[in-house]
Length: 129
Image (cartoon, rainbow, N blue to C red; front, side, top):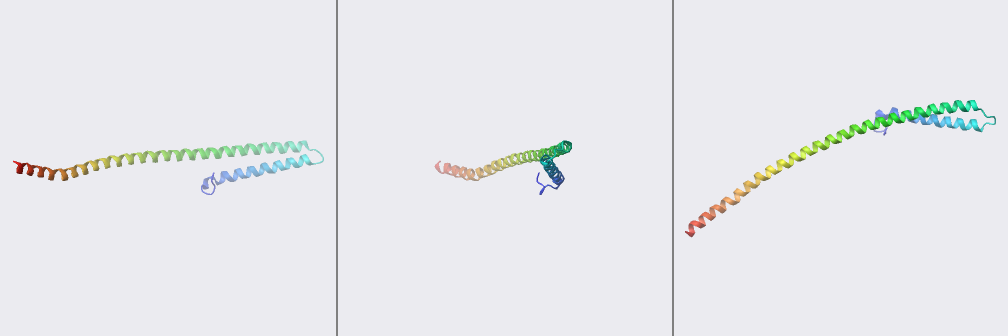
């Protein structure tokens, strides 16, 4: 996701960043509870549950972002395929037109060259006879 270029992805990106920050904060809180002189298992359990919920939300956001990227990729692939097909059609049409033009031009040049030669040959045959 490129937030700078695709504004529709800003919300996804910000949510992911927020979830990451929340998980880091919860992890730090969990570390602090372990470092306390008196062990607080119920507080640790609460923080762990909140951390798991946060992790699940984070994974859901990642999946949503991946789904979004995959749909964009499908759109871009379809556009690329359409562009390639259009380019093929244009190229084939251009080749056919060029072949026809070259054939017409070749026939014209043939006439220009052959007609004087035939006249010259006819005249040479008359002189010979």
